Image (cartoon, rainbow, N blue to C red; front, side, top):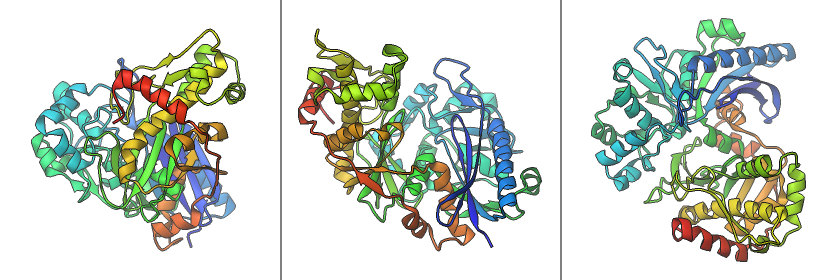
Length: 488
């Protein structure tokens, strides 16, 4: 009888494999790293073959640990970085390195999509405007710039779905990851033939769409031999990394009052929905969720990454604890200093890669404490900008906090004050690999369905005290309006 499930997350820096028991406890884990390729400015690529080799190695380590400890895996769920494009020929061989989610080579392809279909219609069909990082523009880029390679393409897969092919020999995807391609009709969760016809692309280029908890195959004999995993191990479709992390947090369309906020390199708001209701202007993303529902995703590109930049460039050698303590000594509003956190341009709600960061309101009395306080406030207020667009569609009252910045109650208090929501710290932060393992639990017989598993394993949180940021928020909005216009 199955005792554990495996979850596999193929990230940008490496692959992580975990084994969870029915109580959600981790009984084994392994990780491997691989190279990031940057052959031209703005290009980011990886070799799918490197993902496969790292994955098989990590699976072998976990399989050996499970065997030693007497655990039997019943299913393996998949997760991974979204939006990447793995181009395969008719024999299933990789044609070229895969452009990744943060690759910026596709500006002309985005323009081609918007010329082929009005933005409003594209958003109504797919939930999103054309976005440079999505997979669909990458396919058009290949057709325009490497026609000899495009002519060989039989299938284009997302990163985790390529690993599913390596493990099972079969082509599948699921809605949460496929929604980030740019060609999935979110209402029907099938390939939108109108979008593809407008771009002269065949639906046959894309894999079959299964549910996130569906079994899409079993381990190939050669994979069994390489890893030591049991023959017949079920492979479950899984979810894109944000959706899988949402599963691990218990964020469900059946409980739309609880979402999440991540203060990682970027800041991310995850809001579950029961119906696919996009922002008509496409200022935040609408994706399918791995639990069968939907979610809005708001992304500010510089959150904890802005603090890292400040420390590295302006306060080298100073600890983050010191910077946070200095910020805590300054009142809300940072003595008149304001920070616009557009170090990498901005995603939600401005969708403008050309925006740039700035401090304003500096005086002779301003110092590092005021600048750090303003930086923390600016990141919180950028999340508030995104939430302003999400609020009309959202029933969220509570946000579970994740990411490195979530260790700071001060920063979370600013977020709570800026968004007007209950923000909670959680003791243990599960990630996408854990979510993939939870998605595999029904297939292994550990729970009757995904909702049951999510409810049983959802972490609990402790509310932080909201910080009154009303005055500081008004100053930020005035500074932001001078750069990008009034709040959307």
